[in-house]
Image (tube, rainbow, N blue to C red; front, side, top):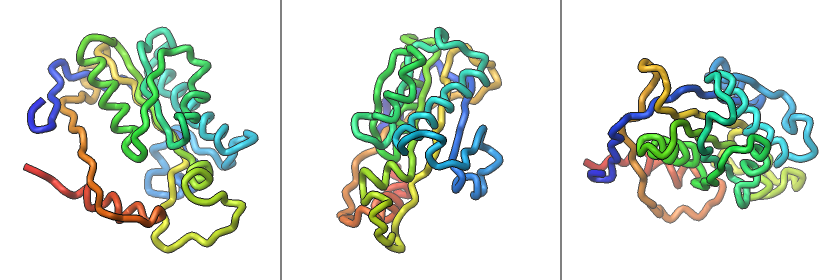
Length: 213
């Protein structure tokens, strides 16, 4: 590690990946990149939390299928979401019977889980690891702001949490032309004094563009 940059000696590769999303996400410019889109916000489930778990479960299933992988091929899965105690992940992947490490990094959860998967494979402790995350607009609003049933008006600066899930399989057995992970950078905490819970753009954007030599 040099100046917060972790160089991976063996450069593990991305064997497969999958992304699923909700109706609103499919209306954006990335609509043709999703493996599956769900029109029903609850996906036929009793709650938004259960819907989020199903999002993550389906993302994992698709990544395994696209990589021609079986459950036994996966050594560990790093997964997280926005709910308390990673509820979405715990119930979403419980049926896969894969060793599971819960990760919580809020908006950085996908990057963080991918870093951990890459380091696990690069170190030789794993042959193949999964990095997974999910979020659901309705479950996030319910937990962090106000239940949607409350009917509160959203302020102009309010963000719209993604309804979707992504899964990446990192492996030392991937094809030589597969994308490789060479370096990792772990971020620092920057408190910009933003107290408006709805204005996450103001809290995060300045950090995203700050580059230190």
